[in-house]
Length: 440
Image (cartoon, rainbow, N blue to C red; front, side, top):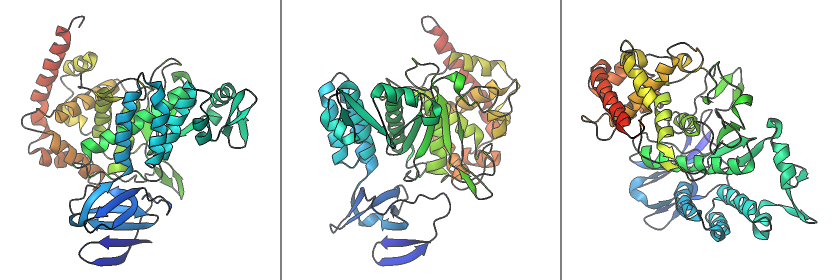
């Protein structure tokens, strides 16, 4: 059981049961601040910030609900992270600014980002004593030592030790934990990229999907150093996301799996794709348990949106951000060739058909999901379909209404089959644009 306290016109203390999978947090994590109109401050961790009438904070096992009409301002860790990355972008070409940003992050309660930034500092300035102190390093002769449980390593020893998956690097952000044997620099860039995605995700979809913050546990992302060692889920070697499984009282945490194509790859393959699927299950669906990891709530929508965002997010490692979406020529041509494969088939595809059962039409399933979501997400589409699609995702993932095509038809205000022709016409236009480019 968990206490619920409500701040509003009256003061109410009641009981609220927090079920399995709901975030629980230590009592001392009170980094988010809600200031009321009369000046009182309520501290905790924001959990729900997009409900129309109230905001919910977590204080350990207690939920605090505050009527929106009573709120003067809100300052959250996500707000601070947004500002951190604005400042982080100024680092390109400005090495002396690195440590200042680590101090700034620590002063704003971004302890995980501060440690990441301090790690970046010592990789550029090995003798930076303040950064070493923050990280808990110690000097032995001419060498700085890195701690790992009860062992101490030089950087070269540490990199070699963590190159084996059994004791891979584990780096934390504010919302993600990355486990990787792909090298320390790559690990730092990966966490920064994922945290940037988190901020953008809430800024973009917070209100339409009524997103809930990730407080605890953080989202685990495992990234292998190359494709050859990656534990593939099927005969197709590709990144994937596995939802939480709860069988006979044994729970496996929801986890994203990705890999670097090779040791010189700047970023893990399709990193943002699997991270978006992870975000859908943590911030929309509330991390529901499944009997197996082959289940999904809305397979085509999750796969399509993940690919769509992965195409959007570009930039140097650690500095990724959204760019204009562009179709992949081969995907468009593949969909146009297969006239017998329609949207009605796509929207009835099960998770197994996307992830486990590999067939001749598997590439077509993926390409169709991607391009249909891209079509729906186009803000210039007339009539506007984006809002209906997002509402459908909300109902499928949060309300448990499944991936019913009738529910989708109802929200669209038409049968999905009626979009077949305009969708294909749109693909044809995008294909022609690509072919018209120099070298197309």
